[in-house]
Image (cartoon, helix red, strand yellow):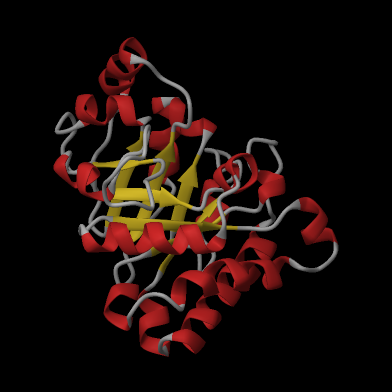
Length: 247
């Protein structure tokens, strides 16, 4: 049985007082086979560590470099020092706003794997690419750049998150049918690159305006193994309802 995940991406939100209030308000009962966590900004990783039971703390990004004269960077080894459990890589905002390439994403994934941190590899197409029928081509290029750089045993330690760019923070959501089609494609692609058994073990999350209203229908799809949640994860009650929707 594949592991299920509900992971929150707080992006550039929440300071100390907000985090304390969030922790106080979050009412979470751990569920067998379900991993739950959030990714605050780098500044608050230490503050979040150990505050909640059976709860993962993640990073929103990592450097492609291990060490050196790279001002402002944070390495995978440094994240490991803070007991970070997962790290987002290749989020569309990193790709679009900071010029992150598929090759750089692959380097980051390898660095995280070397430190025992789960890479959550984000992929997804823009609205123009979606309307042009290029979604699968785009995703194949994004994931192929990573898959070609890792070994079969390493593949078993990654998570993929499909985030259609046109649905991130817009209030738009891919229909369950559309999301399932892409998730199934990702699993087929993984099967081609590795093996059918390996592909069946891959946890593939959906991200893109996931909320408490649409989560249950999305999570009911056979190839959707949870969610990468943006704005709704900032609200403890909403985030908890999304977790409860994952059975």
